[in-house]
Image (cartoon, rainbow, N blue to C red; front, side, top):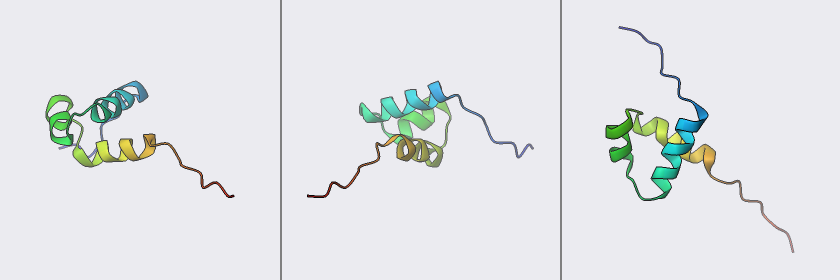
Length: 56
């Protein structure tokens, strides 16, 4: 068995994140596209906009 992890393109990652944001569950995305739930969570976290704290 190979220990090599799969490589995914940025387009694929962005598509998965968009599908998640449109209502697909992690389980659905895992079943349909084969990426693990933990991997998808990382992509979602990285894609989230960084919120800046504004000072008044």
